[in-house]
Every structure is written in structure tokens, then in C-alpha cells.
Image (tube, rainbow, N blue to C red; front, side):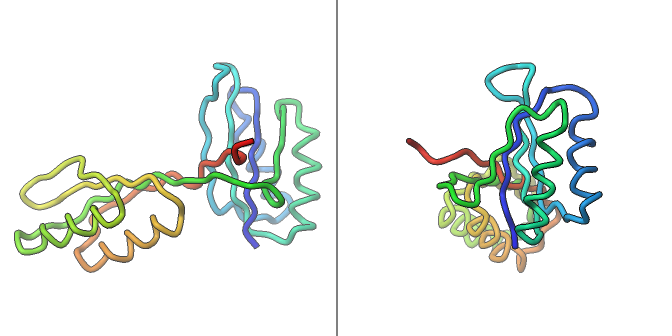
Length: 158
């Protein structure tokens, strides 16, 4: 079962490796991991999606809390969660397909950020299901390259 965790850490070399190693030692697969600076420049937040049994994840959380550079660990299992992913996707274009690709972009509220004679790059920031949906619709056009951020999350509004 997929679970989303948020981990506030000291922003210094080796912390990301230490966290991912803790999951690996427990035999937990990391489905996605997104990390970046937060409002305090010496801190980073990691949004980690793992695919494992609840009890195994609980044990891993206890290990993570013992690490010196982990400031706060939040499990979104029982909380309201606001989550999004960022997708960059480059598709092959032929003149006849351009209207269809633009309709797909409009349907998902995606933006076209680059166009050439042979390809188009779109971006979408949305929840995982919508990102997956847009990828599925663009696949027949010919995906040249794509990159997605993994889940970014914050707790719901108070």
C-alpha cells in the first residue's frame, strides 16, 4: 500500500542518501521522492511515497526519527493532504495532430512551453491521476521524453 511521508531535515550533504538507505535496509521500495529547500534556507523537505505494509513503514519511521538530521516526520495516512506532481512531456508532432494535442492540453489545463517543427513540450502541475491521464492520452502521439517530479505534498488547510 502506498503511503506518503513528509520529512523536514537539515539541508546538508548526505542526508538524502541516509534517508533512502534507511528505507532500503527495511526492504521498503521508494515509489517517489521529491526534495527541496523550504522557507528556512538551511532546511529541506522531502516528500516520500513508499509502497509497503503499514507496520513495516511504522518501524522505518521510528528509525528515521532517530537520525540526527531529521527534524520532523509526518505521515499523511490519517490527515488531509494537498498533493501535486509536476510533469514535463515532449511529444512528437505532425501538422494534423497539433489541434488534438492542444485539445488534450486544454482538457488538463496544461501549458505548451516549447514548440519546434517536430516536437512540442507541455507542462502540467496536478494530482497524480490527472498526470497519468494526460500521459495516457498523449502516448499515441509519440512521447519522445518525459520527466515528472514525484508527489509534492503539504497538510490540508486549517
